[in-house]
Length: 95
Image (tube, rainbow, N blue to C red):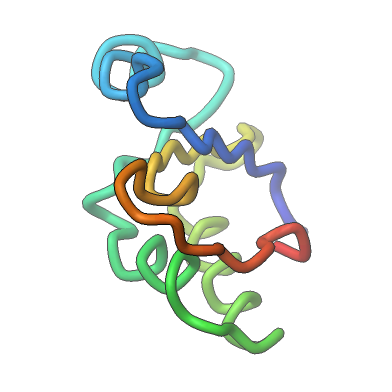
């Protein structure tokens, strides 16, 4: 069974680092996954064109890292794109 995943895009200069370091780890009702554990998957979400199979594999890893009975929280400002480059990012709505 798939767990609920909350994805915090974390736009640049909106206190994302503060939230990641001070608030999210202390939340009791969600499991915050640190970006170091899913660095490759976050990179792939951001820059690669993914197949349905790729998306399912990433989702399965996120589910495995979460805790039973708790939704998972992932915070990654890289999904909002670079504030210095005007590149279009692919939609991850299907995720």
